[in-house]
Length: 376
Image (cartoon, rainbow, N blue to C red; front, side, top):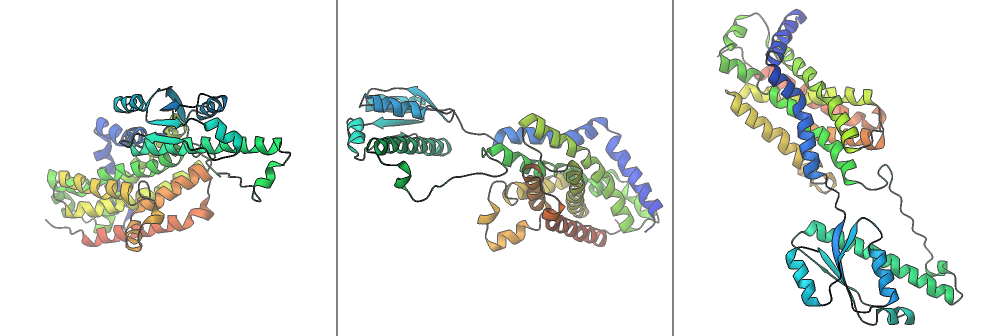
């Protein structure tokens, strides 16, 4: 391989990228803009859900229970209906998403040590919000019930720890508050960094469409030199987006970055190399830029959303689907991005995914060099 010819192709391709300042800035900023848009669309932490309480008992115990329900920002006490008809009107108007019905005799049953039934009526038109309301109302109810049992045991002169032989304590590592955005946004960074590969898919299609392929065919440059010369400038252009995406995730959305920035930038090179290699192979088989950009959107965005573990957990995929997902570099880089951002993982924990991306890149780059023919 003659590196002087490779550098000539690199210089020519870099001029193609940078001579249109608007396109170059858009290429550099498109991952950041995509990240912001997708982050607001997908990373929504449900909280402050409006609920109502139909208190038919009107006792100090029921008021304590209501205070427990509104003790966090997960639920907001919005209405206190007086009848089931009013509950239905509130649901129909969308003022509340759930209503807790406290029956008569609630306090009497608790004082007597009997089970008291509490009903939760939820609006099922929005399953996500309904599930959130059920989960948090249930947790507050269990907490309130445990407090009452503890008080009754204390009045009887018994220790509360006799109630159970197991003291279960939960602790979430790396993301203690279980913030949805802390997991979603690092994965989205891995997906939006494939956007520059869409521009790389135009590399050879543009030569055919503009009629400049004849000039390249007439030169003594070899196929491998041409492919490498076109690949490197797009990898460099894509690298300019990486620190911008990291800064947006950290300072714009408050996502912790516990790993090494230098390591993350280095691993991003392998990811961009793999995605650009796939894009160049696509460019070999397309005659127009429009077809190339549509094909790259299907390949990179479809695989990013549905096969990288972003929307469908990787653990629930079948064996065949897992094999297909592992062929896409986005799957590996989403794991790397979450590991570096949230866990602070190093190369010792991530080298397998890096090797997989490098193997995919080499395989598709070799196929591109073999499939490309220096003829019209």
